Every structure is written in C-alpha cells, then in structure tokens.
Image (cartoon, one colour):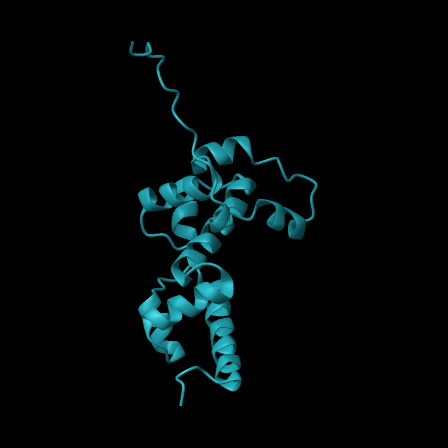
Length: 155
C-alpha cells in the first residue's frame, strides 16, 4: 500500500471540507476554533488546516476571519452601528484584533471605511456589492508605505 489516499477517500475528504466551510459560513458569529472544527469533522487539526488550504486557498481560521470582515463591511456600509458593535456582532472578541485584521484585509481601519466607503455600493444589487467588496486574504490590501525623509547621499 502506498499511503496515498484513494479517489473515494479524496471525495469524502472534499465533502467533509465543504461541510466545514459551510459551518463556518453559517456560524461565523460563534466562537469557532480549528481544533473544534477538526474534531467535529473527524480529522486532526493539522490535516484539516492543510487540506482546507489546498481546497480553498487559505486555512480555516483565515477563512473565518475573512468571512467576519466581509460581514463587518456590510454592516459598516449600513451605517447604523458603531465599529465596536459591529466587531462583536460578527463574532470577534477583541476590538484591537478586529481593527488590525480589518485594516490588513481592507486597507483602511473600520471607522474610516464606515465614513468613506459607506456609499460606494449604493444602488448596486447586494449580490454584486458582496462580490465587489469581498476581502480576499491572498490579495490583502497594500499597506501605505511611510514616506522616507530625504537624506543626503553619502559621498
């Protein structure tokens, strides 16, 4: 025996990964961790993380955070909730972590996004707005680079 999974096992694993992804999509506001997701899926945490990354391009925790930030963006665009309330509404337990991840994925802090980008999707169907504004971890927003002070060239 070679140790390579059979085609049937690969299909079972893909079905399991789909169920894990669907669970994250449904329960993103709940406290989810990779160990719990893996245990419930009958896999080790390491195996789930590796296989999830292969199937979906990012590990389960990153997918969860992307989903939370995506939902936060929609709530912030509505404009009727504070950043703190949005943070907790999407399942984040720390405003600092939420702000850091939001800024990394979107390119601006949530308060700035709320003020500047609230009307960028006005008039768009919600399904199009979701696609246009979806944060994608593999294409994280570029961080603004601080301008370097002009220094004289050494002689």
